[in-house]
Structures are given as structure tokens and as C-alpha cells.
Length: 556
Image (cartoon, rainbow, N blue to C red; front, side, top):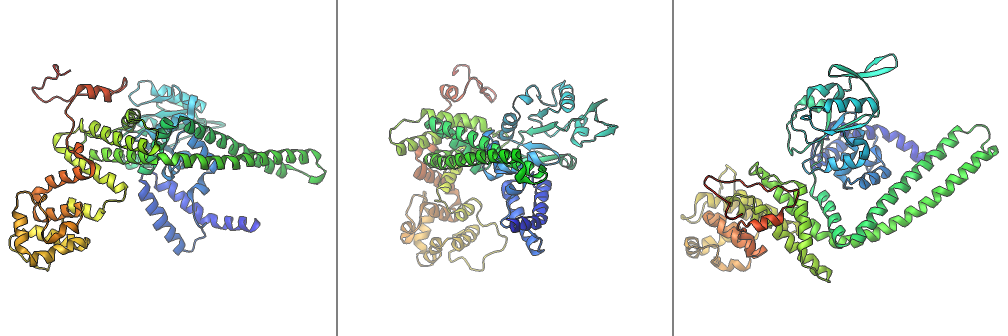
């Protein structure tokens, strides 16, 4: 143990360097970028410089503890790696946190974490008396939350953000507006924004800890799994929540007992064996610690059993996460297509309630998947322009199949972009009727897919058959020459159609969606006000955007 302690002390140099770098620079970035910078660049650089470092290095071991992570989980913060990192940044950073929180994950956790202390102290900059409440929070050491801010941060709070504390004798105070307000070190300030990609100035980044709380697919899947299990097996979810709280309380108590043990030993004077009171205290602490350790071992075994039971409900959660991110990606097409996680959760919960019941679990899960996919499709299409509905169906189909490992990402990338290289192929086109860009696309396709490489040989040997296929009215329906239909799957055939007849891609996409998802997903729902009402709730407004001359009064 002493040897391990000495090694840990030696490795503190690299551990502290990486931890400080993480806290200073990585808060605003996505999980993938954080991982790439931390694991691939900084770790390798430290190794090359031969700086002592714990291997394997874990931020969680350095900046938090298992007790605290379980406590965060009990406060509704997801337990995936990104959420734990964000919890560390929120609680350990020297600057006050500004959370990029489009799915409102951070604000939910902060409100749960602070509880009643935050009551009456949640404001926006538009609130006329926010400054008065902020003064009281700073003075008495209460938490304070600026919720749903935009890119503007009122300069009046700069002294708070910068912690410009003045000292006059034993008094510590800041100037807030035109007042001097006594500073309490227990004061905590949080800020959250719903903007998915806000543009803050370098000054704001210098004054605050900007933290990207944007949910990942894995993190959302964990949250949705809780929703599914809570609906299908309420007893199991309740047991899990109680277990989380129990483990959190026991681990906190165990840590306190360990700290008490060390404190008593460090404060002992003289011969420890002669100190009867100390020996008695140590015995009591030891008995309690052993008892709690046994409870924790039992809880771990129970947790494994619960996780095994919950794992059976993973598919609906996985499908839900995929569908939400397809919906969220629509915002890159139009600023109107913004979907909040809270609204999606309503659709998700409604699908669980409306899907057909079945005593067989596998069939029940299939019913949930079917209803969920259809409901999300209907819900999303209701708010899309007509020209974007097929694209949404195609994206949804590819994402669902991609989640099941049935999609070649290189082929998808080719189908969407084609050959964008400016360099021309050295291989001459064997037929004069094929467009130049089509030949360039075909060369790229053959280089990334072995099956499609057979097309080039067929063009040379069966050029007449290929010409006839190319000139047909519906090449996406006709069989490919040379019996290639038996060698190419449906998506590979779509890529061949793109090379020869890009004008038929829309029809080919429609047929692909029908083949993989059924015809329902190429027939957007007709606007039906009863269905719109069914998708709403007492707290969900329904906004109609009317074109000139439209009058929905009769339909309503």
C-alpha cells in the first residue's frame, strides 16, 4: 500500500496537468472532440515527454468519486461518461457554469440538486427585479439560476462572474450595480441557454465556464430506457430508484466513517493502546463500516439483476434515441425545424400508451417499435414542408438501419454526394452515351464497393443491354443487365441508378423506403385536426402557420 501511495504521489504531476487542462479548455466542446483531444493528443504528448501519469488515466478518479457520481445520478443526471464530465465541470471549475442545454438536461439536474434553496431564485435577464434577488443570494450564500438566456449577458453581473471581491478589514464584498454587497463563499451561480449553437464572445468564455450539455445518443438512450421500464415495469424502475438512493446514502456514510477513523487516529496523542475511548470509537466505526460494506455488496448483486431485467427493454429506447436525433438534424435545413426533447418525450410516452398490449414480451416490444416509429413520423411530418418529407423518411430509414448495422456508411456518403473530386479519372469511358459525371461517379463507386466493380466489365461486354436499361422509362424497376440484380443489394442498385440516371433517384429512394419500412412511410399523413389534438396536451400549444388565403375555420 505504501508503494502504491508513493507511485500515486509521483503520478500526480501528469494527472493534475491533464485534469487542469480539461477543466480549463474542454467544457464547450462535444464529447467526441473532448475524447479525441484528451485521449489521443494530450495523453500521447504527455507520454512522449515522459511525464509521470497514472495508467489508465480516468478523469473520474481524479476529479470526483463514486459516491458523488451516484449522488448525481439520484439527482437525475444521467450516468453516461459525458454527463459525468459535465457534472465535474459544473462543480469543480473555478468559474461559474454557463450550460449549453438545448434538451434541458442541465437545468433539470441543477433544480434537483439545489432543491428548495433555489425556490424564488430562478430568473431571466428580462425579469425587472432579478438584481434584487441576486443581491440576496450573494449576501446569504444561496444558489441562483439564470434560465433560458440567449447570447446577451447583462454587464451588471460582470463583477459576480469575475468574482471581483474587495476586502476591507474582515469584510469581503463586491460592487453589484451601485451597491456594495457582502460576499458569501457558499454563493453559487448557474446559467443555462436553450440555444444549441450559441455564439458567445471571448470575454464570456473568459468569465464563465461554458459547458456543452447537448445530449448524446448513448446518454439519451439511457434516459429513454428509464421511461420505457417505468411504463412497462413500474415496480422494477421503483426498485432501481430506491437502490440508487440507498447506495448513495450508504457510500456517503461509509466515506464519513472512513474520514472519522482517520481523524481520530491523526488527533490521538500518547500510546494509542492506552486510549480506551479511542479504541472503543474505532471498534464502533469498524463494525459500522463492515456492516455497510456488506450492504453495498448485496446492493451491487441486486443492481446486476435489475440491469439484466432492464436490458430486455433496450430496443425501444435505442429506436427512440435514433428518431430524436433524426428530428434534431432537421434544424440544419430550416431554423423552423427545432424539436425540444420535452416535446419528443411526450410523443415517446404516448407511443408507449397507445401501442398494442401483448403478454409475449418480444411481441410487445415489436408493437412499441411499430407505434413509436409511426407516431414520430406523423408528428414530424405535420410540421414539415412538403418538399422535405421524403428526405426525412429517407434519413429516418437510413438511421434505423444504421443502428442495426445494415447500412454501409461509405455507400450512403457516395449516394448523397457522388464524386466531388476535381481530378478526372485516367480510365476512359467505354461508351459514348454515359454522361461524364456519371462515369466519374461510377469510378468512385467501383473503388469503394467490390460488387459494383462488376458494372464496368458489363459495360464493355454488354454495352447494348446497358444502353437499353439506361434508356428505359423506369430503370430503377428494370433488372440490371448481366444478372447483377442477384449480386447487388437494393442500396447498391440505387447507387448504380445514381451513376446512370440521377433523375430517377427520387423514385429509387421511394422504392427503397417502401422495401425497408413499408409504404406508410412514403405517404405523409393528411392534416387532420383530430390527430393534431390527440398529439397535443393541456400544456402544449398548437401553432398554425397559414399561407395567404387559407381559412382553417371550417375544418376546425
